[in-house]
Image 1 (spheres, rainbow, N blue to C red):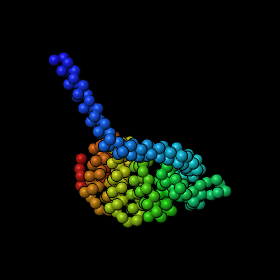
Image 2 (cartoon, rainbow, N blue to C red; image 1 turned 90 degrees about the vertical axis):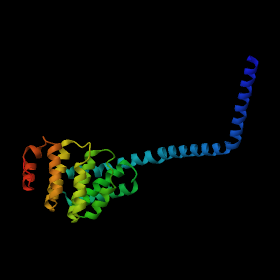
Image 3 (cartoon, rainbow, N blue to C red; image 1 turned 45 degrees about the vertical axis):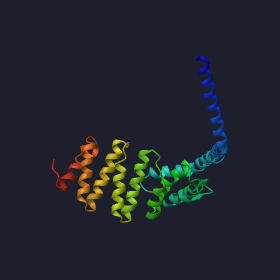
Image 4 (cartoon, helix red, strand yellow; image 1 turned 30 degrees about the vertical axis):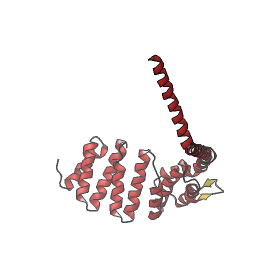
Amino acid sequence: MADKKVKTEQIDASEIVEKAKGFWAAYSKKIIIVGSAVILLLGGYLGYKYLVTIPNEKAANDQIFPAEKLFGLMAGQSAYNQDTVNMVLNGDKAAGVTGLLKIASKYGGTKSGNRAQYMIGACYLQLKQFDKAISHLKDFDGNGADQVQSKAYLLLGHAYAESKKTNEALDYYTKAGNISDLDEGMAAEALFTAGRYADAIGKAKEATELFQKLKDKYPISQRVSSGDVDKYLASLGVVK
């Protein structure tokens, strides 16, 4: 019985080997082709990353710094200087500033190129070129940076409001306050802006919902504790 069992196992093993050989004979060409394709794709990815992506990221980061610094200084002022805005957008070789428009065009796939889209949109908003502001702000992606994304949505709201596109403006104002991980202060302010705008364009239902959401979700925010939200709700017919 033992000998029979050993022979059976040997036969089974032989069959497995033969099947494996048969499988390889049938599919070896496909396996080699697929394997080669994977190697080529991996090699292409690594080559692109180290020969193109990383150098581009560094070049874009180096070039954006002067314009980004100017933009930061402008953002901290009460009024934008048009000459400075134009320098930020178009650059100034003598001043060593590369324009954000050039950076966004040349390095669009980089993090710096993405940041440039936000700043370009903000600059065009100041220049009252609202269509251009909308186009560039839509091309910006916060990539998880919720506070910056919220600001971009607010700027889009302003641009659409100035363009008299009320539905789009309200939509972006609302989006600015509905980002889940946004800090309480920014979320409350964005919802307050959305509520006021909805009220201003005669959308009482939406305004009521926005103010009520602000009151319920952020009860200790300055807009609620100061009584501003209750005043708007009262004017909309909502009593405490």
